[in-house]
Length: 100
Image (cartoon, rainbow, N blue to C red; front, side, top):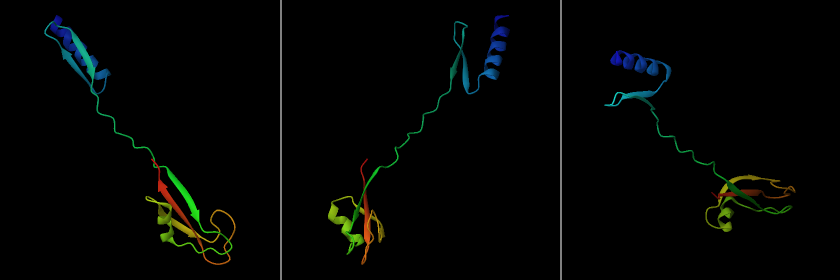
């Protein structure tokens, strides 16, 4: 009778609890342990610092000027207005670096 009860309980536990392991100890008790998988590591989104180079009205910035800000700075884009006043000549450049 005990073995039949164990089988019934094991079958019910398996049917009701998905992704679990049903174990029977030598003493006759039944235990249910969930099957767990490692959680994926979530990488934080990159955070950038940005800076415009070039001053209106006579803008003369070039993409290579981003290097003058120090290491890690890279060219993003150029624009005639950028962060404010419009250039009468030349363009401003937007530079950025990752800070995290």
